Length: 239
Image (cartoon, rainbow, N blue to C red; front, side, top):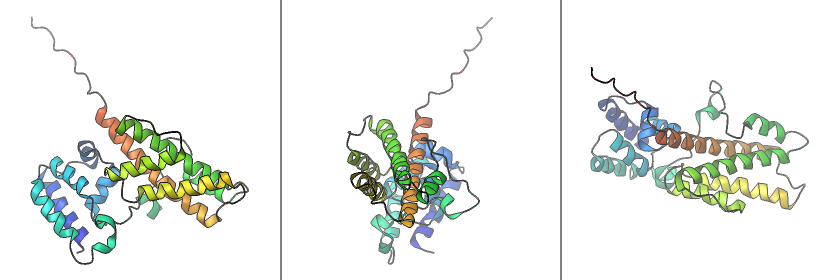
């Protein structure tokens, strides 16, 4: 097994010993999105330590012992090529399976619409929609996790994704994706008519929507975690 697969196997054992809590339960306990939690147990990449620390606490495991195991997996030969802190880019299941529906986003604009715009007579719409879903996601992340609102510059949106990545809320590469979409979006507005190729537009749309989907997961977790507990009825008075 690879280092990531071996470590994921250990995580699954800990999960079983803890009573096999659901992904949703672990998402609520850790503050990470369900897709991020699922990836940690899948073993396709080595998760960040910030995520593993939260998982260890949620599963009642020995944090120091898990840290040693994580560090050993990170330092295994061949693992350095997987990227920063042993990570590879997260790929959502709906991008690799025709059996899973593409998720809806809060803007009500779909990836199908963006892709259709990319091959239409108005390809600039694909860039606009791609940027718009990222903009809304950044506003929600900033409000939910940082009690703040990004500044008026579009670069502030990119900075928000960078901050969320640095804090371990989003997978490595989040800032790079937002920055790439930002580059093409701003460029198309500054120089009308200079639109990327259809192939590039389709790639931009997929990257933007994938990141926006991860942002949506963060908001769902935060919302469910902060929702008030259901009020229990008052006990009947004693006779």
